[in-house]
Length: 313
Image (cartoon, rainbow, N blue to C red):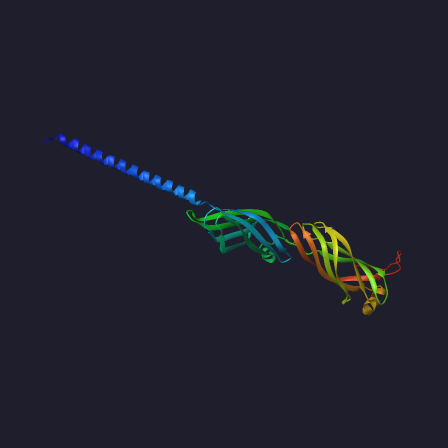
């Protein structure tokens, strides 16, 4: 065999190897394409897809001077033919970039196949905690908030997914209204029974309107209760505003002993009031306490209108 035959043999061997590689790569590509097509067909047939979520509504079922209870309704839709577990709910409430509250709800339930569920996330803001951390947040103010929620779900084919949600709004830090007794107008005066009208001044110390619906109250004169009642009364008290209301009351002067004689002689006698008002606000209904202690009243007689009035000092 001549030396000139060797290159030809080598060239054939290399050519065969190249052809084999091309055949193998083409085969692998075909297999990959087949698997991809089969995967798409399975996904189309079975109908797997990514779930969606949205904040449907935010409720404030309870707001008082101590706390605000918040319930976040999150609507989750599952397009898959199998139920998917809601692994965790991670939430954060912040105001102007400062954390007010955060938490984690594990094992939050299951979303039915081809269904939708409204998942409720209850959170509670304790005002004392907020005010102790951020002293610039004052009672009576309205603060902006940003709610961030991460829903972690486990979906076949896709694995674990995080569905991020975000919502902004405002929340109040309520302050109790201030109450004063402006005067008492006596409709009828006798030792056995006196009927009077209390003229009250209510001052709204909040940066939002109050719609007064009802109030309950009890009044003491010189540490003797002169009566209590519940009254349906409609009135609007504008933000940082004042409203005047009248409430009826009846009592027996003979029960007061020296306190009434002090009033007749022109000497002051102390009074106090306490109760609650039911109000509507832009954030929902509230029941707020009202109280006044250490007020002083005097009886003024011989008014031109024929009535006697007590003035508050």
